Amino acid sequence: MKIESTTNLPKIALPKQDATLDLAMQLFLGFFILFLVRYQTPGLFLNFSFFLILIAQFVFSKSPQKNTGFWGSICLFLTYKLLVTYFQAANHIFIALYISLAFLIYFLWGKKKEVLQTNMLLILGLTLLFSGFQKIASTDYRSGDYFLYMMQRGDFLWPLKHLSQTYRSITAANLEIINNSRGIYPEYTSFLALSMPMGHAKNVAVYLSYFSIGIELLSGCLILVKPRAFISHALVLTTIFGVFITRQETGFLTLLCVLGLVLSENKYLQFTYAATAVVFLGLILLGVGFL
Image (cartoon, rainbow, N blue to C red):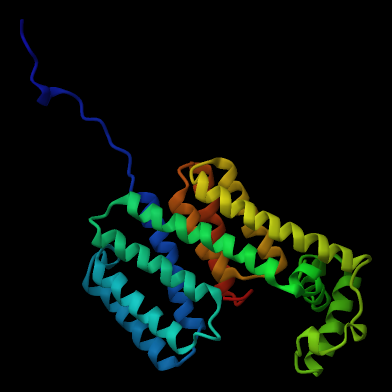
């Protein structure tokens, strides 16, 4: 019997398992560069200097984002930013630091994807859970006052400003009153001076507050328990789009998309995460929303 050599067997093309991870890194770096450009605290000089260092790494190295030194420098920079602005720092700085640490650990640990996904899973799941718990603990949020105030100034349900002239004119007048009072938060001023932009606005604010709390807690639990399930990521995306409609935190939402992209194994969900992140990055570039 003649035995054929195994060297003549056709080679099976392996899927590019790192393609999604590379895309996630690129999206994160896109956010980080825009962060350097727009978030100037504590100083423009520091941001510009680190921006030049970042660019130099790409000039003198083919793929600097695939080594530990690159991610280590980003971690150190974000740590410094966080320490000097801790009590004023927005949530996106914390999440950005956690994600950069996850990438750093990934390369230090020998590029084990399971380690990266575990860290990304904890970041996403705990972020959603703690966000839900924080909303439950907030009296203004539970009562609907926060959403009502944001609705009266035109930030909450902002698409209605483009669909209704009445809604747009009322919120514009309210915003002028708020600006004249130096933007004092509602518990220190009277709601009576502000007009309701729509009927039953108070009830709408209360119902949407509880819906927001419920969807964040449910998506956080599911992503921790079933990180590969379609329904888990569908709820995460629902949370992302819901936050965008209620408050345009484009930077924070971009980072949530990066986390979801790394965790999801469904190509349609991956495309949705990536496309959504690109849209948010474009909005940040245009100055839309809150970085």
